[in-house]
Length: 143
Image (cartoon, rainbow, N blue to C red):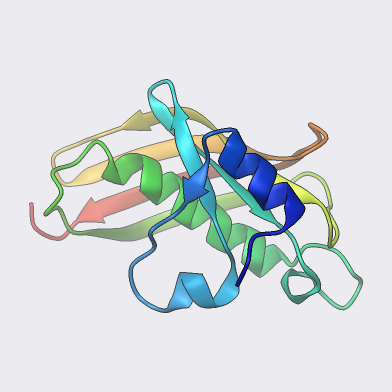
């Protein structure tokens, strides 16, 4: 799949495709990321397949982004061999988006614990509108 004009601009801005493991994530979206200080910043362009029957960004898709984006920020603070899964995910929907919009993550904090770690942030539309507040807890399986 070739990048859209927007994705090409993101590449010029230092964003790179997210190297997702497994088949699920690559099957549903092309995610991009770059370092943003202590955190990773993610972006994705919404297409019609990411929308519900009302033409708005599907809540399940947005929750998936929240899960992946929070976990991605946690993973960079753990040893590469660390294995963890989502224990709890809270997503507060605060706005709507549609196909053609793009979303971007903003991290507030990541707390790494011995067995349980936590992260929180927001998802904004490309025009700056607040779309989602997100919080997650993750449990280490190898701790």
